[in-house]
Length: 108
Image 1 (cartoon, rainbow, N blue to C red):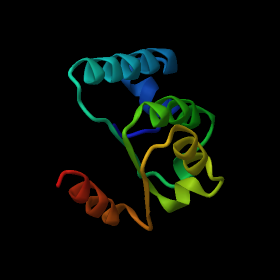
Image 2 (image 1 turned 90 degrees about the vertical axis):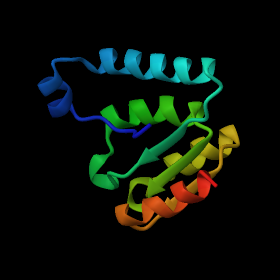
Image 3 (image 1 turned 180 degrees about the vertical axis):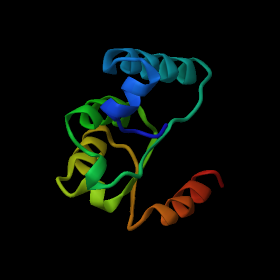
Image 4 (image 1 turned 60 degrees about the horizontal axis):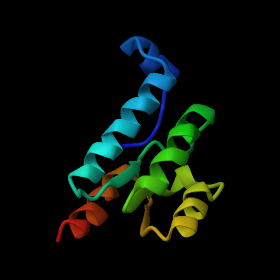
C-alpha cells in the first residue's frame, strides 16, 4: 500500500479524503481477511507530507506488517515512532530508486 494524499489528486478523482480513508480501511480489512501481509511504502519524501498525507500515514503504518520509506519523508521521525510503537519492521532508503532492494528482500 503506497501511503500519501493529495487534495489535487482526490479532487481530480472526485472523491473526498473520507472516501479515500474508507477505501483504505476496506483494503486493509480485505487483506486481513485473506491472511495477507501488508507492506506500506511512502516514497514522496518531505514534499509529500502534511496533514492530509499524515492522516493516511497514521492509519496505514500501524496496519502494516512492514514499512519502507524514503528517508526525507521521515525527518520528523513519524514513521520511526509509529513503527516502534507497533513493533513493525521498518526500512529507510535514500531515494526512490532504492525502494526495490528492501521490497525484493521482503519477498524472499
